[in-house]
Amino acid sequence: MAGRLGKIAVVGAGSWATALAKLLLNNNDRINWYVRRPERIEEFIRRGRNPVYLSDVTFDTARIDFFSDINEAVEGADTLVVAIPSPYFKDEAGKIEVNLSGKNIVSAVKGLVPDENLIVTQWFATHFGCSDSNLLVIGGPCHAEEVALDHLSYLTIGCHDLEKSLEFGHAIAGHKLRTIHSEDVAGIEYGAVLKNVYAIAAGIIDGMKGGDNFKAMLVCNAIREMRRFVNAIAPMERDICRSAYLGDLLVTAYSLFSRNHNFGSMIGKGHSVKAAKMEMEMVAEGYYGTRCMHEINDSTVNVDMPILDCVYNILYRGLTPREAFGRIESTFS
Image 1: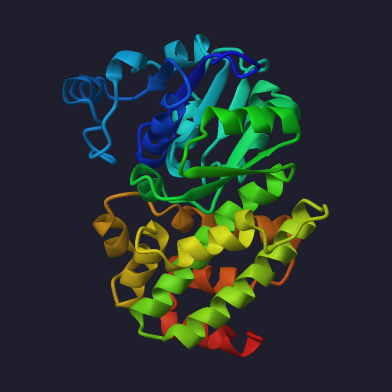
Image 2 (image 1 turned 90 degrees about the vertical axis):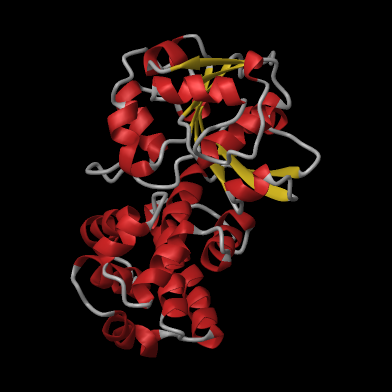
């Protein structure tokens, strides 16, 4: 695709990366695609579809340049669409030796960078000197599965450069995809982490058979909790009821596609955290996000976050769901 985005590379091979690659190929002649395992690439080319994720979605692989070397994939690209699950992000992105300071980075990572507790755009700015105008983020509400099923979907694209945000919107446009544009890059990223935490809480309530009434109160209080946090850590004028915040929270807290909700549901039914993690076929990023956000709030932000604390106490301190929720249910309003 001509323009400021240039050649696009997808970095990652999971569900979200696969859905985004499908969208990009609707509007771009060719893309680079980094898939870590060479045997997966061979099977992908042979079958014309991702052998592991969203395997019902077909691709014209003749229009894809596959790479199992991340540096080869990104070196020839001007724009990187990074869709690596957050627990593995640092291991994979840390292999990059190419100068990225002049490239566009589009983060589709729904979590924080492990150990460093940074949102992904901050990590690229810190480690590669990327400027704000070259850093974009994709927000919800949107599940990869529904994009793949060609359901009407909405994405929020955050960037300090509105024209670049609009151009990326054109790059992924489709007759069933709408894009919304925002300058609130940090707010979208932090909101995407928190909604996963709250989706785990909603799943726990469902697993305990706590009822729709209680879950509705949880979600109402969760969006206010999210507003307190993002307004403190990234102050700006924002409407927390917009789709990138409340919409993304709702779809993640209620959808059967939500890994975080399903992870929480297993814990609510009595599974141990370890057993629930082992049973999940895909990563529930809220598990890792809970610890990171708890550490950030304790060390830096210091706002009232009883739901975050509740989930942290269940996942990392061994409290039972009934004990942990019993401590906070009187705080709901």
